[in-house]
Amino acid sequence: MSAFILFLVFLGAGFDAVYIGQAGGFVPVGSLLALTVGSFSSALSYFAGDRAVLLATAAQPVEELTATAAPAEKLKLQQLTNVVDEMAIASGLPRPRVYVVPDPDPNAFATGRGPGKSSIAVTRGLLDTLDREELQGVIAHEMSHIRNLDVRLMTIVAALVGTAALMSEWARRGMLWGGSPRRRGDRDEKGGGGVFGLIFFIVWSVAIVLAPFVVQALAMMVSRKREYLADASGAELTRNPLGLARALEKIESAVAPTQSINRGSAHLCIADPLGRRMNLREGFWSDLFASHPPMPARIAALKEMAFQKGTP
Amino acid sequence: MIFIVFLVVVALLVFWAIGSYNRLVGMRNQVLNGWRQIDVQLKRRHDLIPNLVNSVRGAMDFERDTLTAVMEARAKALTATGPADAAQKEGQLTQALGRLIAVAENYPTLKSNENVRALMEELTGTENKVGFARQFYNDIATKYNTAQQVFPTNLFASTFGFKTAELFEIANEAEREAPVVDLGRK
Image (cartoon, rainbow over all chains, first blue to last red; front, side, top):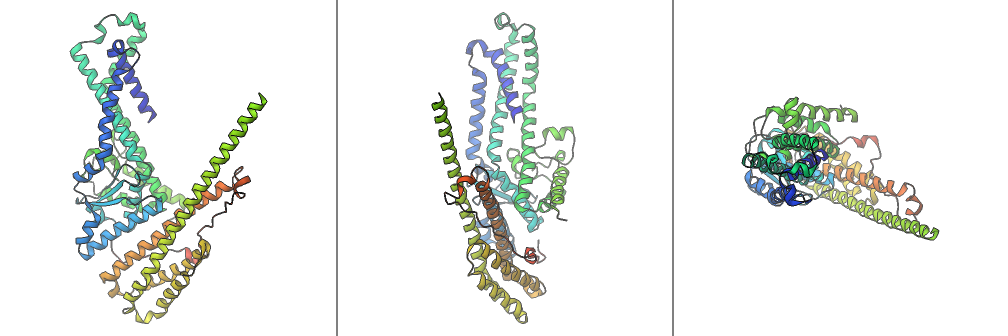
């Protein structure tokens, strides 16, 4: 997270120095503007995001489904409601609303601004594949996302990603239309940068072009850390790491993409809904751009917890 | 100069005392609330049992002992007062219920009965809720107790009437085994 902010400060400083430095004086107009636009768009998603996600996935409230379900189906839904209640009690948080997404691929996500204003949604496939203990593990993972305020965190991250993308875009246009900014006027003498200024400019030019990729990688790094955290604190809630481990194994074996969940909410799912193979193996690229840590690593971490706890 | 230093030290001490007092009050309320949560779940369980016993009675007529044991344990649990007492009596009820559930496994007619299955799910859910409420209660009660006992808060905690919270603990080994409910469904 701090690497993130440092990188942005570097981008912003360069941006202002090269393009607006003289006009704006000491006020970093350019980066402030980018930050404002970035924050605004993500504030919008922060306040309306949960409704949008639930609408986009066609999620139905579990209460409505229970009212019209057949007896066997009703039992399943009752079980889901009970498991969510149990986890709300275990975490000491108000009970989130529960939704079911009509999608055959097993997956689940949490959304909402924070405890008391959140929802948990599971897919139909998840209900059909998992038994009670495994379902409990998954719900505990989602409950932990809520408890750790991950929605808020990822919203801030999204704002920063947007800011970087904007600055990069503006800078590239500037380069294309305005030519090299160094040709314009006598900035070098005034800045007194000389060799240092030149080196800074070159490094910055490379950085600003690569910025969207770099911030994306940083954002995914934050996301992966929160996934491990949610796994661990989920296991702390159920005191049963193996339940979640078994659930992850089942979810992994059904690796088809969850079609109804789009990219924007990937970081709140139990497993990457895009079904990208890279979440399944370890390696350089998956280390850089996956929203979730590799499944084998997560399962191994959970099994290790179970081992330390002394359960077979 | 010395006077000013003295004043600053006193002010800091007062701020610290107010801060810790308020923190302890907050924690005490959390503990009380945690206990109420357990209580709610225990009541639910007590309400659920007569239903369950009635619906399995027909099929399990000759398991009269098991059924009476559950009803007796329930009656006793209703009279419990305070966490430690409740923990002990509820533990016996948990045990009796576990036996009932285990015995019910042997009756295929019960396993296929939708009504009984729904009741069993309710019972499992409630058992789990009791367990998780207890886990949450014990966690915050332990934090509360620790906050009172650490130096230097321990110097004034008892003066202001803060008492150690009782934990909700299970007394004997056999009760530690949670009843396993598995009716073969996913």
